[in-house]
Amino acid sequence: MRGVKLVKTPFFSTLKITTVILIQITAEIEENNMPLTLTLTEGVLPAGSENTAVERITEAMLKWHGLTGNKVMTPNITAMVHIQPKGTTFSGGKPFAGAWVEWKTPSFAFADREVQRGFFQEATEIIHELSGGKQPRDNIYVNVVHTPDGAW
Image (cartoon, rainbow, N blue to C red):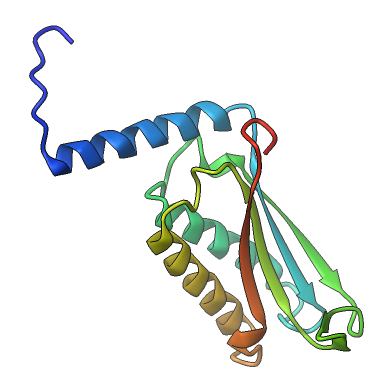
């Protein structure tokens, strides 16, 4: 780089790595999306609040990745909601009421343990709050499936 002096400090190195990751996300997102699947047992959330859940979970994902307001990333997060009839969701082979938040992302998303913990806690709180406090946090599951590059 002509006329630019690079100063190596821990902060600069971190900033540089973060910039590279964001550039990679932006480049790959242009042709792909990162789908969110929200699966709920009927009655876990009041009817009609699913849209709010998806919006808030999407906002949380962007926030935990430092991408709030990103005009490339935001429209490329897609979502689908599955409402399962009571009696068709199970724990230990027995019917129960559950909520599942699942992302399919490239390996560089949710790669940091702090991001995982923070997002998982926030997503759990979103579902618990929208349920009116009725859905036990222990029956709210959050996971991320990393897919091969280009297949997400």
